[in-house]
Image (cartoon, rainbow, N blue to C red; front, top):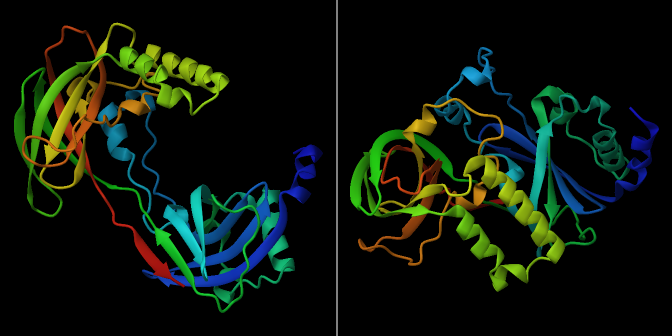
Length: 338
């Protein structure tokens, strides 16, 4: 601990707005503490924190990629981290993201303590159920407003509407499939609803990711969005990542597909799934997770989607044993009135 850390705290929250509303949903209680104004305008919500059960410790180097991917799991969809819009009366506030974490270790987090004290000084009276709740069972979610420079006006009789937009839900599948460059094929699987889903592979190609990256960095539509310094920084970061994941001269398999349900499919090379992790490998090839096809619909009249199998192969590779490892189901946005 250093005194310099404390110097920043008085200016952390210049003003606060108390809301103090409790929401009960699905047998759980959530509490909208209020908003703060400082470097940014933020909305603060206390919600249940359920710590995942810890599995028996293992040496991570001995765990194959398949197991690590399966253990990743999904975020809870009841969290207010998925809030995209917060409306106070007629005032709509867009949210541009936020952060959340357990209060378990916050007894020494003076920013969090200061926030709660400032809220109490401004009139926040925590409800009885919250006053005696163990901090080990709570997390604080702080969302950043995108279109506000100062706190909005609020009175306790104002209606509050929250727009939730959860992430997609992942469903494991692990269905074997072999891709051959230039060859189309179709496959069928049964989804979590018990329905048969058809996936039509329209196109299998080899992608030179270095060439694609250079083309993007030279695209005037992209260049005009960033400063020369930012462009250079992004280039260096990208090329360092490519050196680790797909050295120059190597390629990725690109897949264009249609799906009879609105799912996003994730394929992996079987070789990758059965391998062990390597430090630093594949650290930042995020831009190839979903490729954008040139056309909106495929030959079967369904939406055309694309993805890359992020396992580097030689440019003369024609065949890849792979798996349809999982698919993602969209979750509809929904509104909540308080």
